[in-house]
Length: 53
Length: 572
Image (cartoon, rainbow over all chains, first blue to last red):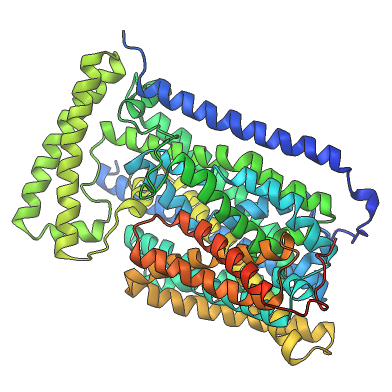
C-alpha cells in the first residue's frame, strides 16, 4: 500500500450515492447478518446433537 | 559430536533470540513509521482528521483495529477455551448499529464539518452540553486507556517472566511516540498494518494448532469434540436478564452499546471523520458490519481449538504459572494436582473415543469425564482464590501460556507482536481522541480560540504526550488494584448508553433543549449507577437503561423550557 500523502479531495455531492442505493446496501447488511447468525445457530445445533452412528 | 543437551540449549537460545528479534523489529518499525508521518500532520485538519483524505478500506480496518484490543484478543480466546463460543452473541447488534449510524450520525457529523462528536452537540444545544459530554469522555477513556495497557502487560509479564514496569512503558510509550508525531494519519495507517500482523499471527497459530493434534484427529473431529461439550453454542434464546450473553442481550443491549461506542465515542467517530467523503465514511463502518462477526468467530474458534488441543495434551491445572508456583507449596494443592492429572488421563481416553467414532455411549462417557475434569479444575481455581487474589481470573492466561508452551521458533515472537499490535492499535486511537477532545473541546473552545493552526497542533502533540504518561501511570495503579479494572469497565458502561441518549435527543427529538440534554445525561448516568448497585442486571442492559432514561428525562425537562428561539435544527 502507498504511504504517500493522498491529495485532499473536496467533499462534493458527486461522491454521494443516492439514498435508494444505500437502502439496498443496508438491506444486504441485515440479510447477511441474519444468514450468519442462522448459520452459526444451525452449526452449533448440528454439532451439539450430531447424529450418532 | 555435540551432546544433545548442549544442542537443545543452543536451540532454545536461538528460539528466544529469534522471537525477541521479531518483537523488536515490529516495535521499531511501527515507531519509525509513525514518526516519519509527522511531516504530513502539521495543520489542525491534517493532525486531527488526516485532511479527510483516507480511503474507506484503511478507515474500515482502523475501526476494527481500534475495537480489537489486546485483552479482547487474549481474553476472547481464553473465554472460548473455558466457556465456548457464546461470547459471539455480544456482537449480534453491531451490524444493525452500523446501519443506523450510516443513516444518521455519519452524514450529520460529516456535513456539520466537526472535529469531535461533542462539537456537534454545541451546534445543536450549547457549549455546556458539549463540555459535559466531552468531559465524561475524557474521564472514562482516560482511565480506560490505562486499563488497555495494564491488562495485557500483567498477562505478558507473568506468562513470559518480563518486568511489569518495563512492559507497561514499552507498550505505552512506543505507542505514545508515534501518535504524538504522526497524529491520526499515523494511527490509521499503522492500524492497517497492525491488523495484518494480528491476522497473520492468528492464521499461523490456527494451522500450528491443527498440526499439533494427534495423528488421525482432523479438524472435523475437533469440531465434533467441542460440539459434544456445547462449546460451539452461538445462540442462547433465554430471556433471563441475569444471563450475560444471550441472543437478546446481544441484539438489544449490544445494539445500544455499539451505537454508543461507534457513534458517540470520539476514538471511533474520529476514524470515520478522516474518510474522503460521507460515502467512504459509511462504507468504512459497513465493513465492520460485514466482517466483525466472522472475524470474532475465527478468534473464538482458535480458543476452541486450544481447548481441543488440551484434550490430548495435559493442560496446566491453572494457567497463571506464578499462582501455581505459590499454591504448590501446599500439600492440599498438590493433592488436587494429582487428581487433576488422573481426571485429564480419563478425559483424554474419552476424547479419543469420540474422535474415533461418535456414538451415544462415547459422547456420554466424554461428557461425564469432562464434568469430572472441570470439577477438579474449579477446585484448584477456588483454592488459588481462597489463598490469594479473591478476584483471580484464569481466562486471560490461557492463550499466552498455550503460545509459550506449544508454538515453534519465531511464531512465539509473531504472536507476541500480534498481541502488542492489538494493544497499540487501541491505545493510539484513544490517545489521539483524548488529545483531540482536550485541544478542541476545551483548550481552543474555552481558552484560546484565536491561536494559529500550528499552535493547536503543538497543543495536540503535548496533550497526546501527557495523556500517554497519564495512561501509563493509571496502568501502574491498575496492575496493583485488580478491582480498578472492574470499576473502569463499569464506568465505561455508565457512559455509553447515557451519552447515546444525548445524541438521540439531538438527532431525533425536535423539542429537546440544552437544559434537557444536560440534566438528562446526569439522570441517565445516575440511573445506571442505581441499576448496577441495586440490581443483578447484566452490564449490556445498562446501555439500554442509560439511553432510555436520558431521553425520557431530557425530553421532560425540555418541556419545561419556554424559550425555544435559540434552538438549531440538526445539521443536514
